[in-house]
Amino acid sequence: MIPVCRLEDLPAGDSIRLDLEPPIAVFNADGELYAVDDTCTHQDASLSEGWLEGCLVECPLHAASFDLRTGKPTCLPARRAVRTHPVSVLDGTVWVHAPAEETTQAAEAGQGTAA
Image (cartoon, rainbow, N blue to C red; front, side, top):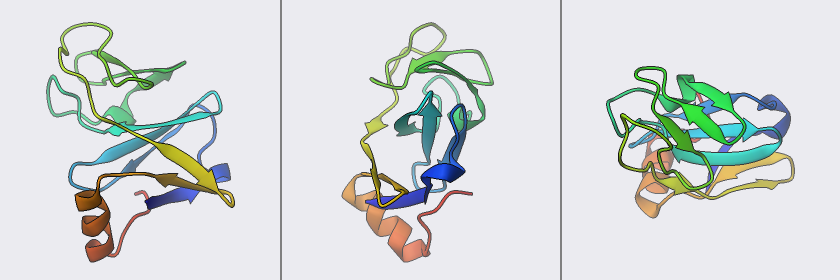
């Protein structure tokens, strides 16, 4: 698991980017937390810089939209889903359950919190 931030530091409607390989974006969508790979599958754009509406995030580059619950695109130009990651809150800290290789990279880089 990778620590993201304190829950109070991620208010509803906001997002945080974790500088991993690949980057992960964590969103607070009306009190529900979601994490997805941060790069749009249509073109290299950061979804954490996009617009959040309910459980959908719109890519800031070409307006592709993704459902944060499933990672699936909801409109063109994106055709492929982004990978989703489980999120939990323990003792007031938001955690992302990332694949083992990302957890190892975060530990080696001495990071795990958002930028």
